[in-house]
Image 1 (cartoon, rainbow, N blue to C red):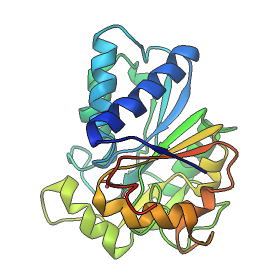
Image 2 (image 1 turned 180 degrees about the vertical axis):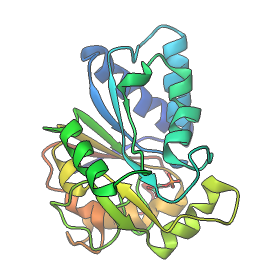
Image 3 (image 1 turned 120 degrees about the horizontal axis):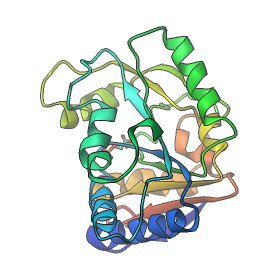
Length: 237
Ligand code: PGA
């Protein structure tokens, strides 16, 4: 796992977006896993501007949503698919059929198996946020390195943090996430971190013991994983 320091949050967002644009231009049919949460928002702004300016196109890309909250209304603005639509997909030229989302209204086990099949040999690139407890996606502490797409319970901290997305107090307690094993099939992984609140987990992810107690550490041995942090998030390294 290599640390890439991005500078101020603005500079960091441009750096990640520029790297992403380079990858997508080199491989227009790139299969990419994208996260939601607040971390990627300034990066998605940069990407949307780049598409508008004709610098890059999602027309041939394929996007896999990293995870989804369960038990929330289809139109709830806090849902992961709604957030990704709002912050990125409604502003770029990705054909709707090339967006893989997790519809959690049916048989969840079947949904998970179908998602694993769709991801297949793995994404070309997986972008991930990181929780203050080291979760990636909804792989909470305890998740095993070979876990696949599955239903999970959310950690109390994660439930509390999700209030930032929902704007109401009917917060989800479970979700479906790509597993650590699913993510480890990606050719390249970028873990994104910004802000002082992530400094401690960034340090642990890079230098702490590899342990299921800090799920992100289990990505450390992946052959191509970058932890891209802004100055505040990298302050403790
Ligand atoms: P955040 O969430 O980007 O809103 O901080 C990250 C995460 O919990 O994975």
